[in-house]
Figure 1 (tube, one colour):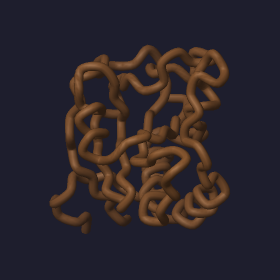
Figure 2: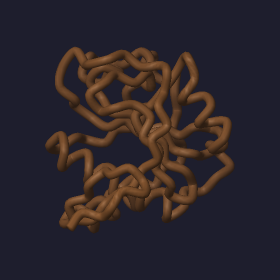
Figure 3: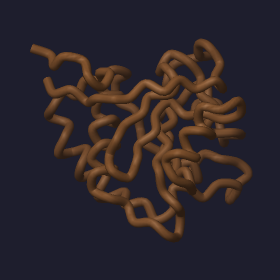
Length: 169
């Protein structure tokens, strides 16, 4: 089983535990760059469980068992912060493309999360945020490419491991 290495960068803004089971993965775009994004996502107000850079580096910010503050007001309880896993992606909407390295890491992360938590649908922040139109991210997302990448990776059992740890035998 291949490893999916991540860099642990703990967020301050989260709530220990969850009010119920994890029901979905929510994709976001940061509308910024790595240094500023990580400062924001580890600061006192907002967070996500994971952050993926344009070059495919993966940061783990909040444990899956805890509640990250990434959705805001959601269309239904099962799409709320307490019931979802948030993946923030380095991307400036309307300016950046979506690099293959980033999409590959997101696809592998989705596979790892589905292995760990059973099947989870992948939704956009725009699809679950209310009122409608409050959030538009991730804009221009290549959903078909992500779906194909997830399909290509799903036969492999990806395991999340801290970067630098020994490979599984």
